[in-house]
Length: 162
Image (cartoon, rainbow, N blue to C red; front, side, top):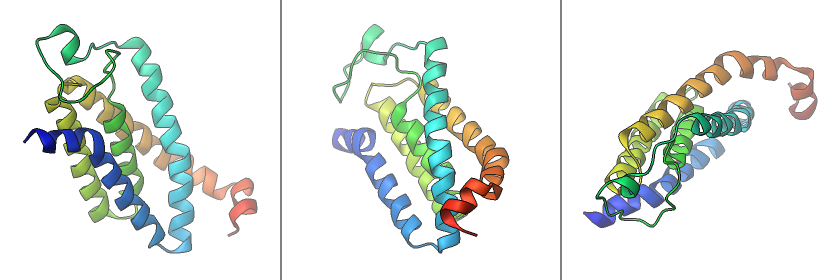
């Protein structure tokens, strides 16, 4: 069982990325353009918002203050938010508007990444929940308000055409 937890905590994110990349390359040029722009806008902003939030909320990892032996080696730094979960959810959010089915699969995998990180003793539930909320809210705002403006901009049209 421990090997599955370790795989989920450390490596499942790679499976998620591979699925998203394969999905991307199987799409039409129009979808590829939108998905690439959405990802290039939302992923860095999600990460920056998460890093800013970590300045205001410190949550010691379970193995720091509790009697927990982690299954994976990790620095004893701030556990909030979980970067692995954050990236997993952000990727799922990027794909979901274009494919509900693949997006749902990616969300399920992101949930497994987060759950594995809890079971591995490197995150608390709050770290995982925070990652989900930050990634989902920021991605939604980017998709709803920023992406349409970027896609209509002259700069976008100049670089990728109509």
